[in-house]
Image (cartoon, rainbow, N blue to C red; front, side, top):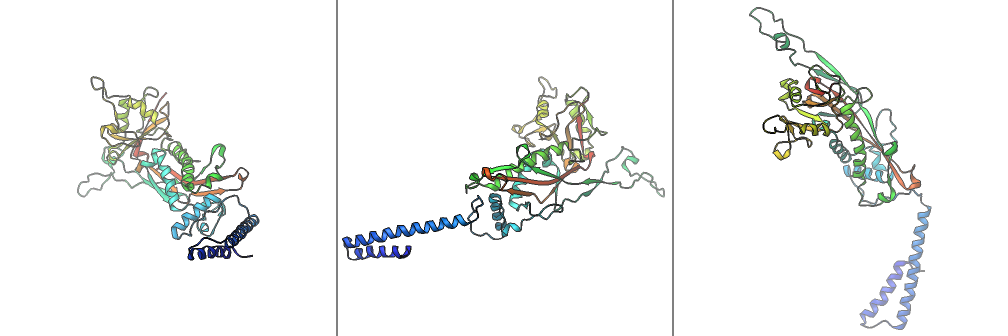
Length: 407
């Protein structure tokens, strides 16, 4: 039996001959052409069946291969990671993405390429204003750091308080003091992202098969949102033992402000809060941090100026620079962080200060993602887990103050 190419060539030769002689096909030529045509259809069907049989004999994974020209360099890592997210299968390029972390199984997850991590970081910034105004450092490992601290704020407006003085000629100075260095332990904690009921996020195979679907963006958005919400909460409320230390998880320190009448906040107390902070910190760029409900209560306050009083806080419509949607309060930007506690009895609810000096956030670079195409294979779903490590600590309580409600 002729091959497909031979049959197509013979059919074309019959047509070419008639065209060259500028005539119609003869009855004999038509019968010969149609015979070749029947043989061609049979040959094509035979080839299709051979292909289907070969597919039946191949291992079935349930996930389509992503067809794309082999990429090079960083692009290869991006392509390999995208393939991994779609199929859960490893290949030579993905081998370069294995995470090497002490105490973890290198066969279980993958570090993410720079583009994916950038998307995740953007998601972290979208939640919780504390991160946007604090000092953020990134480390390549999760070993505990001993973070040095020092406070040179005058203890009093005296020679002894300044730790310096004026000495007469030939007389020893008696008001000096050594620099008192301290340390803050800055460990990191693992934040795992899951779906409802602490099960992995599931994506249908049908959705993954859509070549126009950006699975990398989806995973970074979904997992990043879960990690970001939890990190935002502990940056505000963390105890500092089993979680990072939060800026509001503090007992009342000397200089912090307590409201005199339950949880009510007043114009006078806000002024007291600002001036409870040493002026040296205020000139470096201070910010208010509070949740939106507290901001709403403050927006209703006025300064008492006749006839109806002027509002304490201004929005962007007043052509003043704004924080995360918070406007400016008594001349300082307001950052809204929904994780900040409500101002209530014996609860710190408003923070004010230079948080780049006061608060340190430490991210560990090796964000890890695990793709599981097997557990939910019977429902044609792929499961995703991710985790990231982060730590945070109050470096200097002297760089900010809080306002607390009293019973």
